[in-house]
Image 1 (cartoon, one colour):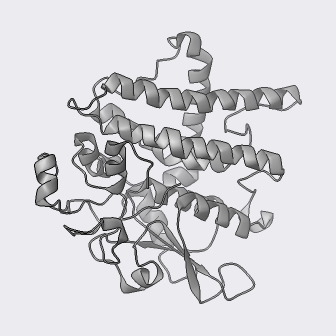
Image 2: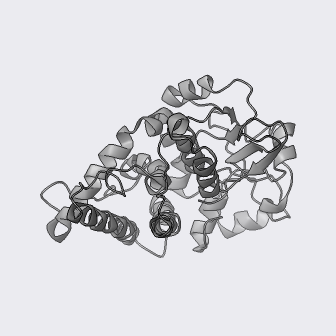
Length: 338
């Protein structure tokens, strides 16, 4: 739900407020001599090793939306916040152009829209009656804001399918509460977990317990939703709202796909118990597995995913806690994610 920004190479200024490239939440920057003295393990140069293009299924989906179009999504393949917006575009069958941003060479037209270089950025045509058909563009950012805009603006059931938020005002508000839980509890917990190193003031077990605790809180709400649905003669699962796929599911989907990185990099792995070994939480983890299988099999999630090997490389510096991205820095400081 947070803004994505690549971080600029500067030594004296607060990076987020500069109008120059590089701006991306997951982008590294040159550390000052003072920063290097504070933590000598920090990288002294920008990591330019990441491929600047999609691969796998995401490459095919990007290619299918490469043609010029008034509605443009500017993003980066490795960014989970971008994937949120991309999933909604897919789900709503919204015609658009996807523009992969090279974090080391921002296109002038992109920086004219958003001088801070934030991704995801949605360039929205605003001079026409029908959404997406105008030529004058204004930017939107913040992944959750973009997702809600797309869901609201493209609301023809025939063309765009079902809404991703409930029609009932109270039900919508409850979904937003749980979207907030994902953004302010689960997502920060993921980064605290993957950035754990032995020199931290907390153990990897602490990070695991905290992260899984936030996940369990969400899953218990899913179980409650299932119970309400069944009491009214309906069926539960697999989604947060039972049989209805929605925005809460979208908000967590990119990190669900990235959970394998915890198993890859962290001792003891993710730590979710195997079936039959969940103890008092057996029902909770059983429900989680139903949701996890459904979300990772969802076509919109698969089609916006590059090859696994690319994510392993992209998150290596997170696992080593040497990345200088804004998300990583906020995680180290125990601050709210930018």
